[in-house]
Amino acid sequence: MSFFKRASSVFNAYPSTSKLLVVFTLSSGGYVAYSEAKPDTGLPSVQVSENKCAKKKVVVLGTGWAATSFLKNLDISSYDVQVVSPRNYFAFTPLLPSVTCGTVEARSIVEPIRKIVKKKNGEIKVWEAECLKIDAANKKVSCRANIEANLLGNHEFSLDYDYLVVAVGAQVNSFNTPGVLENCHFLKEVEDAQKIRRSVIDCFEKAILPGLSEEERKTNLHFVIVGGGPTGVEFAAELHDYVTEDLAKLYPTVKDLIKISIIQSGDHILNMFDQRISSFAEQKFSRDHIDVITGCRVTSVSDKEITMKMKSNGEIVSVPHGLVVWSTGVMTRPIVSDFMEQVGQAKRRVLATDEWLQVKGCEDVYALGDCATIDQRKIMEDIATIFKAADKDNSGTLKVDEFEGVVDDILIRYPQVELYLRSKHLRKVTDLFRDSQGNERKEVDIEGFKLALSHADSQMKNLPATAQVFSLVVAAQQGAYLSKCFNSRQSCHDNPEGPKTFTGTERHQFRPFQYKHFGQFAPLGGEQAAAELPGDWVSMGHSTQWLWYSVYASKQVSWRTKVLVVSDWTKKFVFGRDSSRI
Image 1 (cartoon, rainbow, N blue to C red):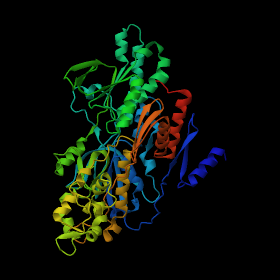
Image 2: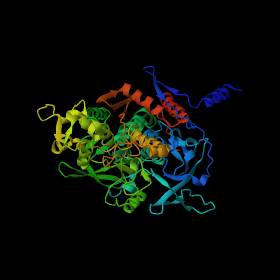
Image 3: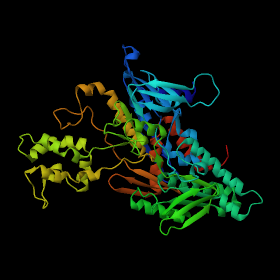
Image 4: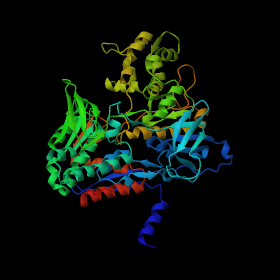
């Protein structure tokens, strides 16, 4: 047996072993990123004696971060699971900007979904199809195969469900700007990144053809990014590195005509980050001669020009371009919009769920990731009920010890209270009982109780959009949380683990979902990045870029993609990026 066969057999014999991924650097030795690889057989093998038809039917729409996390952690011995998605793979979307410039190959960041969900104690059926309609009243979804080949068989089918998990993500928001859909590139899917990669090379090949004027060459080599968020900024940084490190050497006659512009409607790029990161990014781009245009709104895009309106003076400016990438945000998909009308959410912009990720107004349907938002209940809506439940002696006043009896349940049910305590630097909840002079009070009446918690709801925040690896942890955490609820559905029905309902002696069946924030990265090119991590810690520079390499490698969904991504990075350092138009 060869060395590789022996190594492969040893590796496969220990799938649950925690693996260490070493990302070697050329300058500082290296970073080691720890990744806990979850085995396919992490759940105990269960002999199921019941008929398969007795299992509850679970239909999952999507194969993104939320859906994949849910499927990986679900005990399918208890459920009959079917997955519907127009793509049969999971994509590590934070590396899409790297795919656009050949820093990472497209197949290095995708993993077949069947390979991910393969388990020994059951089978998850995967249908490569698009869900056309959700019929909540009859618990049915209508689908159409996403296979364009002229093959035999019916392309449309329907599936019944007992539980439905909607994780279809969102689509690009053009804000109804004329010409965007026809003349802009997007960066949402793997196919988008591949298309941009080919178009960038086309711009250079066209610019060097004989017979063009210098103005025409400049226009062909003007790359415009609309949107100064994380995706737009990272693409601009990747494109700048690609142009200066590789393409300028291959197309030397036009290297001085290249221009990269970022158009941002706000006053700063990366305005969702700490101000220090935003300023650092703007200074870095200024040194790199990346033109950052802030305070203007794009009004139309043609095949030759992009027109924008300056907010400061209302001036209309038209700029010629060779390629435009639109990265301004996302909106609800049509299937979700139609479903929202069915459940009485037609006036909302995003599908709303409760704190347990169940769609409001629809039983047994759950929504995760970009397609939904958690509608956190305000504590002031229940303040009277909480006061009554805590006032054990019905005295009309709440003593400190009575309040302490419900504190834990309040913090679990209303996480904004804990955030409020942190913002006010209060060490314990009972500090809320202090009067305006800071003196302790032994008891408060209902008005004093309302006053103490009146500002807690101001700390309610939407979860971050899932565009970055740490923000995508939102969707992954939601998927893992929901699978845990499904796995413990029966045990938690008999012994509820959630907080008190405050309307009686009952408790909620499950603890509500709580997101744990780990921070976010902003790669800025030139082997530099910025990171915003918990504890108001900000890191910027070359060392942060290597931390970025380490984290992104460790977050890959499989050992195969880890190796491929690190291999692509290594090839880039040794040989440069590939500029072939394939």
